[in-house]
Picture 1 (cartoon, rainbow, N blue to C red):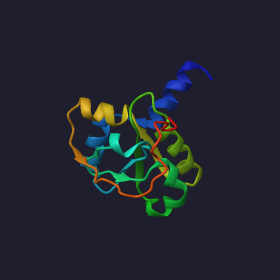
Picture 2: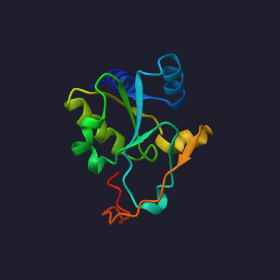
Picture 3: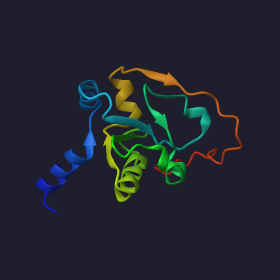
Picture 4: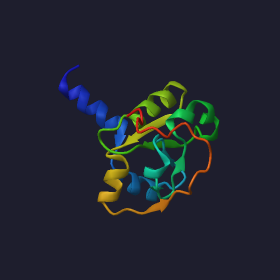
Length: 134
């Protein structure tokens, strides 16, 4: 793949936090933000405002909760995390329109965009290890 094709594909597959907010403002019903982070509950303390939470480990089973008529914007921890990319591949393979949010939660926070606290989960989750599969 030539570099130009790579960068064109990258732009097509991703959306920046600023682009997302602008697009959501212009078409409020056209997008759904989804948090696919996996990891220990003690570090998952917040989510992006307006986001649905479906950890990547649950996405296959919960895919029917997602509307096919919206563009699904997926995010994870940071630029080093690959969870949103993995989720996008799964959704695209199942005929959803999906994009990754550049920079994930870290970029959102850096821009001081709103977040909401996540409620404490009291389940016997298997996500206790520090391996988030990023």
